[in-house]
Image (tube, rainbow, N blue to C red):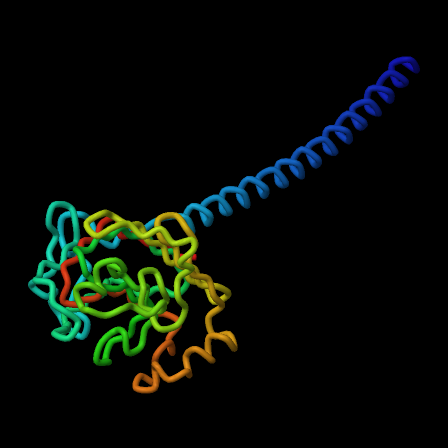
Length: 266
């Protein structure tokens, strides 16, 4: 009987130790699982945010003018159309002295603040147009309030108009503000496709042309304000005022073709 009691005590102690060890094992296993799950959730959330930030939104579907309308208007001007997969301004080329304009269009679905915009474009000999960002309506035209990436045939415009372009008027420039680096710029001849990228953040603006960085500046810096107040914009006191707005394409009485128009938020 005594031996049986001793055995029972030893068995009880072993059982107690077993459950104690098992309890600690369960605790640490649960703790480890919590750490792993937390890490996985954080990782997946980070991946999802990264995915969202890198997603492109196409502003032109290649088939229709959906999403676009006239600046200060409700419908898209008749001369803008989707033709052969291109967003086209179908008009007769005019000399600068006969320029009327008035057919600028905006992508009205959404306004953008920090972004990277990519598009491809081509012009006829002597052609002229532009891409605006941070556009607000209620003004005479987008150029009255918004920065412009200049699109122009550097080679043929002068001959057509019997004039010479200033550097700040040439292709790729931040119009009337920052000229493109002509030593780096590789503009293709009229009739050939060029690629453009505009990257805007509050820290830096970049203009790219055919894979080359041709303009870079800090918006709203002392240098920016000096250029802004140099006289060109005296008639347009709200130029550059807004840090968020629409994307716009210019009617400069010149045919132009766009494709692969896409944007992603930064």
